[in-house]
Picture (cartoon, one colour):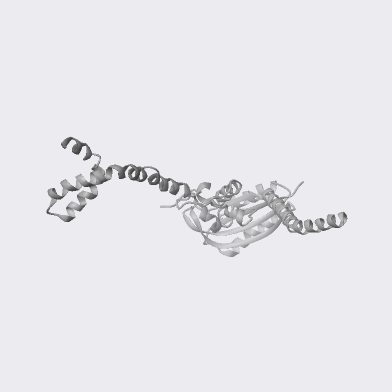
Length: 142
Length: 136
């Protein structure tokens, strides 16, 4: 009797968690309640655990997580200059160039702004010209 | 010789009287005329805050000139004058005709495409009708 009981208890370890919480809520009759509970539920779980545990721990648990990862699609950035059909980026309009530099004065990379390669090329030239004539800073001043 | 287009921007000290700046511009214009070049645009942007300090100054009086010239010598001459001029604290000349050419080319291509695009759907039903009538 003791032998079959002891192997039953360890497998029931995970479902023990709800049982223990029940005990805590019930409070006083801790030992008396536990012994029959494990005995009854252990027998009941034996068949129930197979499909239930597999269902919980295996596919459905991992499924939503993976799906969530897969569903995460970054919003595609569009080149602002392409949208506006810009053929020439004017270095004289420093206000228009300002969004493409960092606060410290660095030119923002393409991956941050979504600018296309061609327009980024023109943009860098325009920014550098503007810097030369003090329309834009080379670096932020202290 | 082919004509070239330049942008010339120079910055004067903010405390220079505007009469002096006008005088400076007129001398530049004069030397440009000597080389048979033309100042297409003369814009005084006025006092502006500079992005960084130049000659310990935070502000400057910006003047913008667009020059069409066929002689590169002129730029040398203008820059020499600006270098010598006392009120000028900074100047920059840029050749922009190639970029303008590129811009015009792109604009033209876009126009052509835009002209072609709406015609297409109009043409295809017309062509379809014609072929249908021919078949009938």
